[in-house]
Length: 208
Image (cartoon, rainbow, N blue to C red; front, side):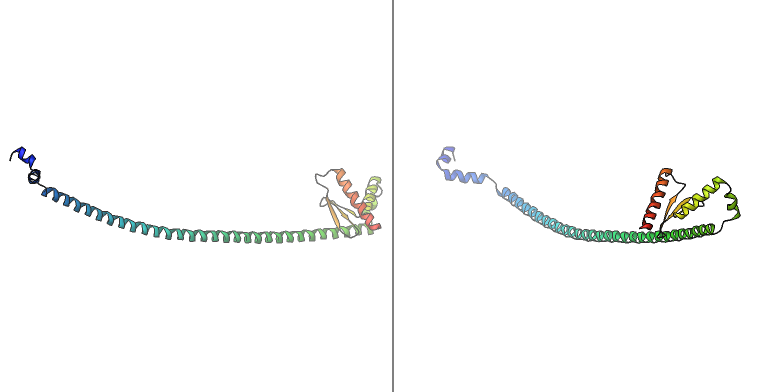
């Protein structure tokens, strides 16, 4: 058929055009592509579901581990608090023990001091009650006699010189004793002032 005739008959032109195109292969290819797309989508959905399951499992494990961590933290805080309380109790026990030892030491020192005071008072009374031959000879020396008189004066005012232990004992009318170390870093002025203040206070209490 001539070209002019085909132009004048469009239906015939379309028929010939369809016959000249082979679309079966294209249709089969498109069907294969659709099938592959379906397979890919199915695989994607399967993988997505698998990943969602894994995520859910991991979230559950994470929650469990967080709960365990919280329990361990609570236990650790409790143990730390109990340790602090136990340490405080032990410290209190140590303090009480130290106080007991200090009290025993003070009692022992007080007992020793009382014994020394009793001995000094007894020696003083013995010296006052009897005058030894040596003292009689010393009284012949003016300087020795003056010193003996000073010592007796001190004793009459409640002052006892303990040369053996290097200290001065000052006794008041209530038999309370103040101790002043002789061999100390205190100045002579301070020692003298301290003794006379104690004597003055003792005499004022005695006269009142």
